[in-house]
Amino acid sequence: MGPAPARTLPATSLHGAPPVLVFDGAGNFIQSWGGPGSGYEWPEREHGIHIDYKGFVWIGGNNCPARGLPASNRLEMTNC
Image 1 (cartoon, one colour):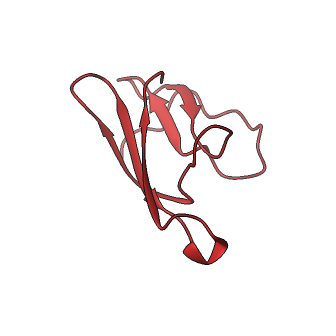
Image 2 (cartoon, rainbow, N blue to C red):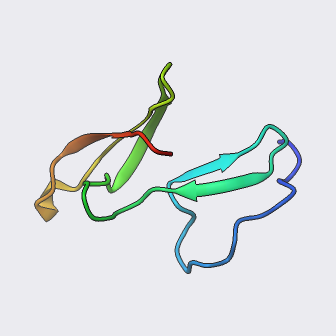
């Protein structure tokens, strides 16, 4: 395991860290983003992330169909 990041995440939430954490090459925390919001359906259980050759970020995951949500979904994030 490598050294701990030089900066830690802000303690602004009683919940876990946001789904996407961004670090620089030296391991310093840069920003975080993702999670439920208006205008899109964020998956309840994220299990895939991909950055394509154009720089678009793709998030894959699934939901709990018993709660009336789609079983799986995919998001393309363009302004990250």
